[in-house]
Image 1 (cartoon, rainbow, N blue to C red):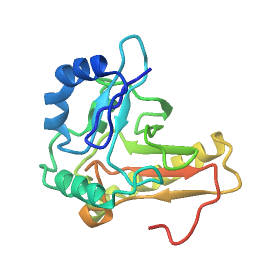
Image 2 (cartoon, helix red, strand yellow; image 1 turned 30 degrees about the vertical axis):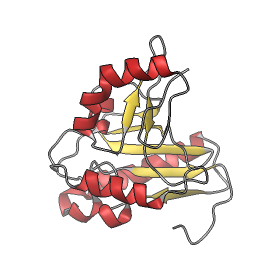
Image 3 (spheres, rainbow, N blue to C red; image 1 turned 60 degrees about the vertical axis):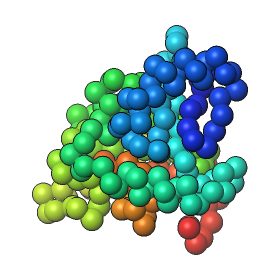
Amino acid sequence: MSAILSPMRLCRNPIRARFFSGRFGSLLNRDVPSLTRVVSSPGLNQTRIASNSTSSSNPSVSSEKDAALAAASTSPDSPTIFDKIINKEIPANVVYEDEKVLAFRDINPQAPVHILIIPKIRDGLSRLAKAEERHCEILGLLLYTAKVIAKQEGLEDGFRIVINDGPKGCQSVYHIHVHLLGGRQMEWPAG
């Protein structure tokens, strides 16, 4: 069973928590300050990426805002947790991959199906507000890939696409990514 380490959660196994925080703590704090903690249990091929996001079990909106602000203060050229997933430095539950796009399950899902879709090469596209005309192809490909994955996941009745942009949009990783959410009735307004 994987352990999740984050400021918002406690590991159920204190021995495992100390092992993982000692082994990975400084690396994770450097890469994504106060937001994301990545831990994989020995022998398991799945990484848990825990973030301070808002859900019915975590009503703390201010921590999500704080995490987004902390992420925004990092250099736009700094490697992100997604770069580590792309480079296979840490594992993820991949559901789709081609030469330009990678998609994997979010480990803190906000719906029964919650998949992150990312470009394999950032090319300066850390957030949607930074998009230039040269990014049109990859942006379209991300949306088309979402449609392909939605069909693969059996979401013919509908799904939601979300792109969080910037600190006020609660973007937590500055490597553009699309959230594909489905498997339940979505509500409006979204947030």
